[in-house]
Length: 221
Ligand code: SAH
Ligand code: DHB
Ligand code: MG
Image (cartoon, rainbow, N blue to C red; front, side):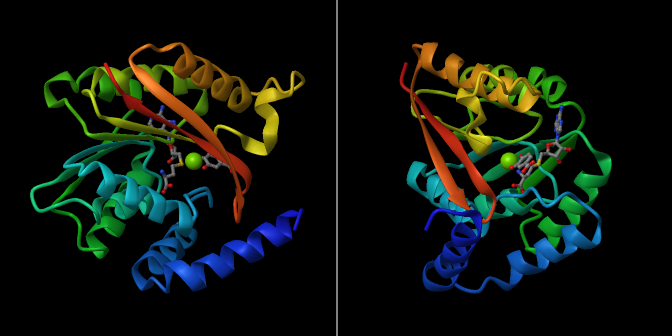
């Protein structure tokens, strides 16, 4: 079981055995393809994990950085209680429009707000909206360390922070990998390791999106 075709097959099996058919998320994926968005949203299994993290935290206020077509936002917003809210930050007006339409299709427009612009600018204006209970970071990888810093500042003790794509093809530990994805991932992982306010880990994954991983931190002080 050691090649990408096997990982993909196992992911399909997990979807069938554990997750079940999800007509809403399947339609959301189709709409993203039809609108020409890049196919880089989280997998169904990863989306379910995000949903479960929101449930495990009892989160009422969720912040997402990097919306794309709204797939991961929908996964997380589904787990919010009545009165809960998810704010998602997106650079591209086109992506935000597709995402808003998808969120409405999923029946979650009352609890999801998508803000367009460079996430760094939006974050700098969000202090009065803190604290968030959970933050999912999944935008431009070069800025991941800065986004992590903002997530800690906009959190409280107990806030969970998830960072996507920290192990793309294992390049984080390859000294020859100097692209912005690898550099950004190393920077955020080292920032997490140094930050005394969090306890953190990072987990590599294989599946329909190849070899990758996510980092998880909880604010403890
Ligand atoms: N979380 C989504 C996938 C996000 S893909 C999902 O799983 O469904 C990354 C997104 O980050 C893209 O839509 C891209 O336009 C956006 N992005 C890139 N740079 C950004 C920036 N500086 N600020 C905000 N969003 C950005
Ligand atoms: C890719 C995947 C992602 O989850 C992402 O956020 C950005 C890029 C990729 O596969 O290239
Ligand atoms: Mg990602």
